Length: 222
Image (cartoon, rainbow, N blue to C red; front, side, top):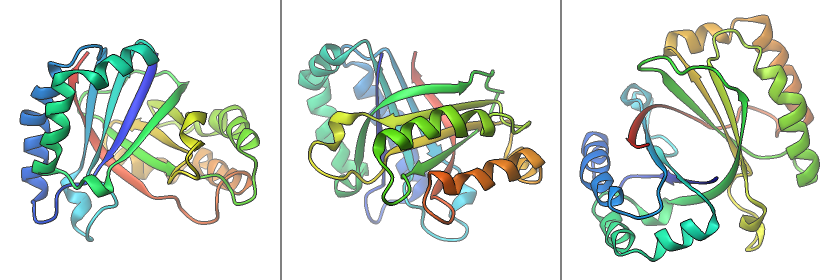
């Protein structure tokens, strides 16, 4: 199964409310008509996240396909051509980032109703080889972070190697975690398991906190 993530930013001058409404209703309807899509999920930034200012992105789009051939057929379809033109209505195309990824489920728990979805934009530690980074993130750090008690589901999305052919991409991957509420997310940071997780990060991540986006899912298809 191939998964393609697009990091979304709204068009300048458009309100968050209008962006989310158009994306979820008008634009989603166009992609529902595209062939080859097995699953389509939009994750919209929580509006309270803007209280302190503008966010790096306003949401992410996730699309699943059977394989590369299905994705190629999808990209050639009339529905996708129409949807691509429609992006100018609500999105800033210069800020869009497309990420074909290999998804690895680290903790396969049930997602609670109305859950919040935390998206962390991940880059490897400067000077660290890509293979070493991927192996450490998945095999060492993943099981450590999965022990945080309030975390319901944890998925690592590793950028596909083909995306490095044109040079260094903005991100090496996305860490996606699901919680019952933002209050539970905050509670999780007070646990010993979270402290152990944070203490492990310098082994493979840059110093400091990585950017995050707190969202809620809107399942469009699948």
